[in-house]
Image (cartoon, rainbow, N blue to C red; front, side, top):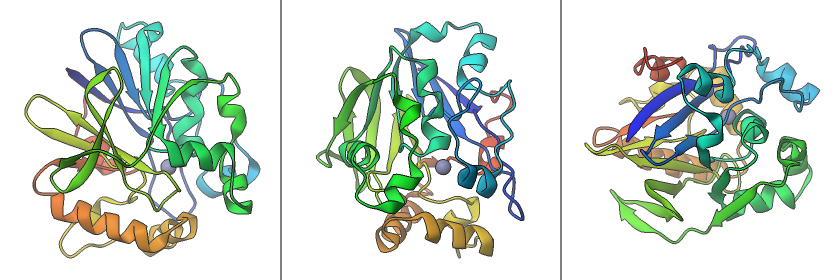
Length: 253
Ligand SMILES: [Zn+2]
């Protein structure tokens, strides 16, 4: 399995560090798998509130589809997309791969398609999946992976969904077997690399933002504590930390 680490959506929130949309492109030998999608080519599904809060740059070179082409690969070979959750900076690129099967937690699909209140209604952009993807939704059942629950995915060897709810209703990490061990894309379980340090640290503004957008703050903190314990044992990174992504350059396009 060859793994590419891509930034599919730079954001420049006011008074906070630059954010990336850290996505993975897996070359399995049979097809291509995308973990999170960042923003779409010509992204036009973002609302004013989201745009004001995170200021997406929308660099035309960054969408996954364009980076896959630059790698000399065929976007039509992306047969699977695994999503940490359905926030607009993770699901925007879905429409660029309309034939891919989209794997995610059932609770996240329910939150986005049948929102429970104003918060969930505001955060998701249904236009990002107006093409009606072939969803594959999973519950919490799974196998033990270093104390986390890892749910194997249909038709996808070596990739598992790791429920880490809190940021959103069905937020999950995505574990990938690299051949030498597991790596864990932790999505928005935390925003800043210092969260996994001992003692943990995080700029105040990001800490406040994490709390503000979480649907279940206590659960998010409990999951983060488990990630901290695991940090020395497996490779973990989050979706938005530019420093974490820079560890993988130059494979970042
Ligand atoms: Zn995010």
